[in-house]
Length: 273
Image 1 (cartoon, rainbow, N blue to C red):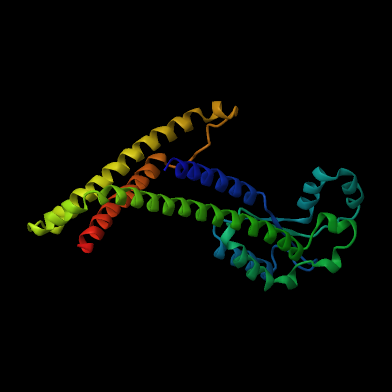
Image 2 (image 1 turned 90 degrees about the horizontal axis):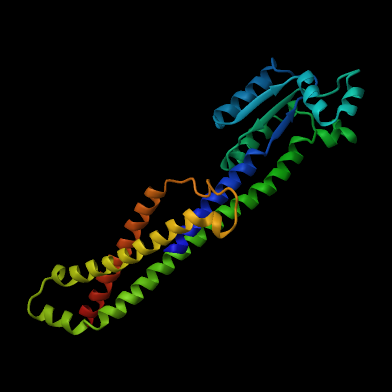
């Protein structure tokens, strides 16, 4: 139970790391010269994107705005370009949810005709203005890694929960084994199923409850002292989830595991008789 709580903290930290990486992923759409912000095709593209992904951060930048942005990156190059601004009008996309990249790709693929593609971005210019296709290929690799990390964390947590269920069932089953004769006698004298199964289920929940309390105390001590344990200077945000809700849900799950284990174990010996 303690290590499941550690995994939940790892899950929280990892997903914040994933979100932080995803926030830095930016897609820039460079328009052909004949298109600008007043073109119907460009307006439709922006509306389609906002409709599919309402939370996306979409910004339209004119040639002059792109030039000013580029000035911060490479002032010397800007001094050359400033004589005749060849930079494209640009739509910048940020804050894209991981699960929405494919939807976004489908929308943009249908509008590639209005975008400047590789044949117009050669040499030094391509270093600063990578085409949409190349941008998405690079981002797709990052997304696949982040998605695998998400799935891996869930698999590990589920595996631990299943392992706990097996361990609890085995321990409670071994304990109830010594009461199999009492179970049989109680049944012979007319004891009801609830009268037989109830105490063992309650007993299983009590054992698991005691274990959960101990593991929770240990986990809370771990959280409050983690910066001292690992000599980390700032661990104020090591866990940003609602700890009370998480512990409550864990208590329900583990108590259910204990109760079901007691029920199944006693039922098994009763059926054998």
